[in-house]
Amino acid sequence: MTLQRPKFILTDIEGTTSSISFVAEKLFPYFRNNILDLMELTDNPVVKEAFKQTVELAWSEDGERIATDQEIIDKLYEWSVEDRKITPLKTLQGVLWDKGYRDGELKGHVYPEVAANLKKWKGQGIDLGVFSSGSVPAQKLIFGYSVSGDLTPYFSAYFDTNTGGKREAKTYAKIAEALQLKPSEILFLSDISEELEAADSNGFQTIQLAREGMTPTWKHFATSFDEITFE
Ligand SMILES: CSCCC(=O)C(=O)COP(=O)(O)O
Ligand SMILES: [Mg+2]
Image 1: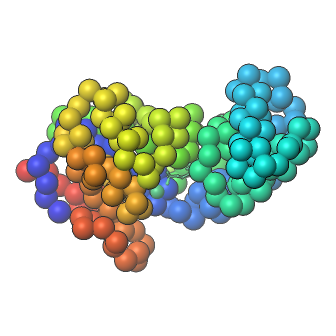
Image 2: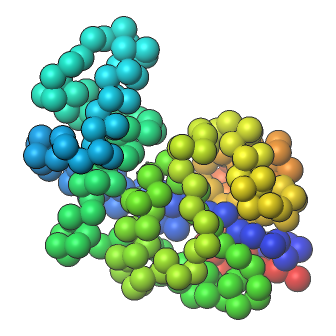
């Protein structure tokens, strides 16, 4: 697919740069297997704030009153099994994954052609950024400790659920504003059509990554980054 060259490419992670199986079968189980380590980190201000948000969300969403550290951890475990894209869970996943990447137990999966295309696009004068439900620190880890080496030098901006939900149009307006670009100057890459729809309704260019035999569900699609080229 050949497009007019955008000024900025914003990419999703799971299902786009990286396999769904790596996230579902390596990252999420690592979090659940090590979740009790959070008990030792309750003085860490990031953990403290995420625990507070967990208590508030459990109350507002389920009407459930949780208070003890064990109850909070049980709730986070449950949300992880359900693959909830909610900020305190995503923050705490990033906190625990940090050790896994640094110890070498985790190595960020990226599809084989990703690094070469990031390099090529950057060489064409296109700036690159990430928008994932994974927290910004978790985004920096998967790309910093990737199977293709440290890819973080390619990215100049990172966005997560603190900016807004990926299926909400207003989130993309906020991203364009933060980048000080017109929406039409940004190309968003994702595997999920609801996310592409939200970006498209805001005027972004969009391409769906339909990887590993996935049937495309969006009007513009590619099966790998190699198929995305610019005039
Ligand atoms: C930052 S890598 C882990 C990604 C993650 O936690 C996740 O929920 C995937 O969401 P995405 O928005 O990248 O599809
Ligand atoms: Mg995705």
